[in-house]
Length: 242
Ligand SMILES: [Zn+2]
Image (cartoon, rainbow, N blue to C red; front, top):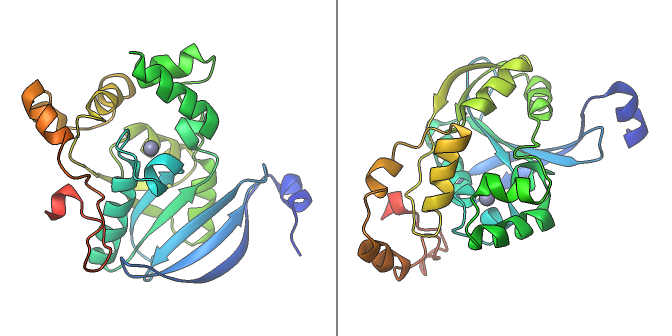
């Protein structure tokens, strides 16, 4: 039986469990890991991901976006798009990293930072105002999980070049950065703009959105939420699907 003490000695991750995970997107295999800090992570694997560079999403946990479909960020839509793209490609995986809330500051601090953003600070300034790092995330755990799964090269589903650099620094070959672009909404436009301008994300879809008039923004604000459930089969409706 592997315990946290064993992991601390080896400064690594340990595969703890594995199971089938059928989802509304398709059939996956969920593999659970424990890291040396006691954080739990999960790889969600579709098809055979060895022997080539599979589509891979390295996703930072975001309770508000992933579970509650918050429109303050694009996390939930990106996760759904990644799962759809992976199934469409026939194989690929999502590595879901816990302990990454709010770029690593934690859930409660993220809620405090969101409050500061309502008062006019951007997502970077809010973290700084709370005395917290702008980005405290480390992707070395993701690299170790990929290594454990026998994946040495990936096509990374991300708009964040720094994520690719971090994975490369940890020995993973990133042959391509595959964009995951979601339609901006009035609620997340400022947040996405900050990510592009201050954190270096590739977000070309914002160029046209930046010219959106206040009237158009008001119209979009009253439109149905992008994650409104389809009454027929419960599938999320995302902007690219309608
Ligand atoms: Zn988020």
